[in-house]
Amino acid sequence: MVPRRDAVRCDVQARKALPMHVLETPRLILKPPTPRDEQLLHGLHSDPLVTTSIRDGISPTVEQSKAELRQYINHWERVRFGPWMVFVKEDGRARKFAGSCGLVICGANLPEDPDNVELVFCLHQRDCGKGIGPEAGRAVARFAFEHLKLEKISAFIRPSNTRSLRAAPKVGFKYVGPCIYNDMERKQFELTYASYMKPVVDQVLTLR
Ligand SMILES: CC(C)(COP(=O)(O)OP(=O)(O)OC[C@H]1O[C@@H](n2cnc3c(N)ncnc32)[C@H](O)[C@@H]1OP(=O)(O)O)[C@@H](O)C(=O)NCCC(=O)NCCS
Image (tube, rainbow, N blue to C red):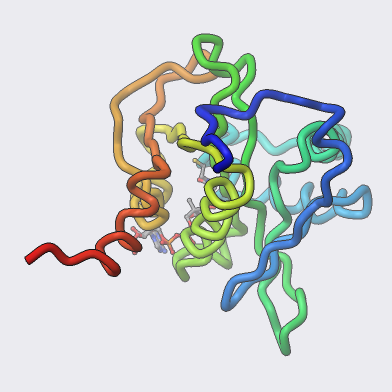
């Protein structure tokens, strides 16, 4: 049996040979980012809800958005996972860009546990409130546990971000406590492999 991992150790050479997976849910297709996604990402990060919720009200410049896309792509190239670009399906095909959702290694944002893997999600305001965040998040969590064989994933949410605080438990996250992330106060959530699997175990095992 493949052992579960507390965190992803960046075995760069081994990972480089792996494919970059597309994920699909009933309503969504999640694609790894490409250099062609510059405008999509810039539009997303300039969305008023996004700037208010996670960017201290500051819209990025085009150059900053390009740099962020490069970071996403570099993350994917290094470890074969990262933030996916989330599209709403129409006739089974990826049509309307809704936002991003994926897995990011915490690194310098969390010096005491830099290999911790966090789930991030971010949608255009027009696509919020329809359960798209939790639907994409559950697909990403499944990838983390069933493909990457992680032991746990985390989320670090600003105390003021009520939408995200409401959405995280729908992915399965449990509140752990306050923490400092990227030198800022956050609420830390965790989803462990054991609690991810619990509904499945409950379905197949009934003790009488
Ligand atoms: C956080 C986010 C990914 C959640 O995804 P989502 O698809 O909107 O999630 P849901 O549809 O489950 O809605 C979450 C909560 O938003 C709130 N909400 C929905 N519509 C709203 C509205 N018009 N105004 C204010 N809050 C609203 C609701 O409280 C809802 O929870 P509830 O249905 O249990 O009451 C998404 O809102 C988002 O991208 N926000 C901007 C960026 C961001 O904050 N990212 C998270 C960083 S940690």
